Length: 377
Image (cartoon, rainbow, N blue to C red):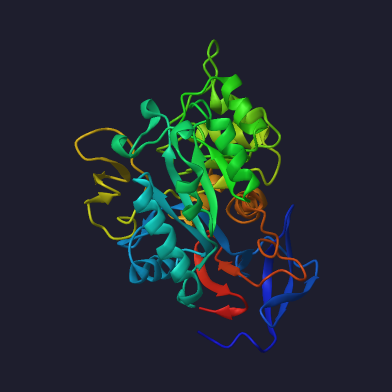
């Protein structure tokens, strides 16, 4: 890694909150010190695109490395993600018995201060479960699911330190109380893996939830007689919504609908990638379950049930743009929106004072170089 202490300047087409503008960024001591716009030509393809570093808040693994593995696996995952432009992430666990989740949380906490400096920076951890609805469990082990009303708070307290995000199905007995409990402890709650009616979903947001786990997947939808969580998420101003933009989980025709219904910065791109992503291998594990890959589709072995993805966040950004969504909006969905979900404000924009986590892209939005905290990696 190069030394990030000296002043560094980057010139190109800067992807700002609402536009792309020709200019230069000056970086000192790991932060953006100056942003100078020069009114240059944006039509040529020679100048690189400069974007904030991507943030993946829902990712189970990458490059053969499992988020629920040991320190070496977490380091390997962080390095693999950074090569795809991801400068910050949340290692994400699938549903498991509470002792196993507590052990996962402890491993991540112990790793955080020792995490490799040449990979994406961990921001904490994410628990996708175990408080999920059985009919909408997707690729989660039925035996690991819990009902909120039956979970003692003393059993959950070992999970809290470092926990940034957790998925809860709002219709389960005791779910509103549990959502409030996590919210009061500073944890962002995301609604998902849910058979909720629209009113049950609204009650979940009213109780303090602000996220929506992979919108449209493993949840009740937009049925004209029995709408559910997807409708509540799209219409609730408090709700941010995750999208797996691989064209498999959600038809691209719906991406523009999401963009029109959610204000800028409320659409959160996630990969939901599994450890098989980026390896070329076709069979593996997700938690306690076997998964396999056919084409780009990851399923539970021997079934058609989707089980995460092999999507990279840089590919998701390109696919959004190809679907007609503007470059600034697509970049926001991979940067400031996931950070907003977590309440993090020190990065995610090309603005003075922001941490210099930066991705340099070519005209096709492919990653050329990645900078973390002012240092090229």
